[in-house]
Length: 225
Image (cartoon, one colour):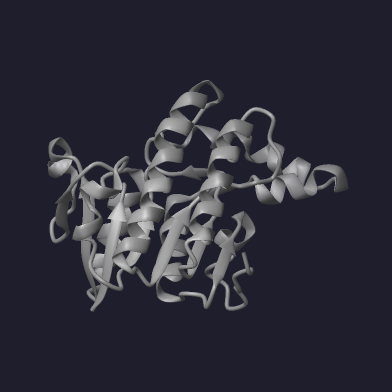
């Protein structure tokens, strides 16, 4: 049984990932949550009460040699949430890195964001880029996943942009932007996370939007981070 420790386990991606792992049947899962969020945790996952912004509140509850999955972040990111990105996304990944080292975890999985330049979301990208550096700086084998926008229940509105993405993909000047900032589905994200968990790299691995979309093909290969 693979031991899993998840931060952000009651969030949009977290709940679905936990359910997918429990259905697999080969995982023992602990999730860091606040007491008021206990009712959101999928049945079969053990709750660990603590503060994602303070490593000492939970680091001694992480199983030795576990896979650490960090999903904490500001919901519905937007340009106006610059300070929240720093205070929540930035601080939580810093503390997660500290906790992971102290707990001797064997694999760190971090959901970042596409790093293709975006003027509107540059603050969000900067904080997540710093998070990637912190995770890699631990020396723990790590998998970094970089989506842009994740489509799913309650998050369907960007689907109206698909014709624009198709148009952008036709022109050399905008083709790479369309690839790296394309839309992925929640199912593709969960598949990517499960794949990353099952395929720990020797040092680090990077999954970009094109990789996330191609996970169901037989030719999928992760990139070295």
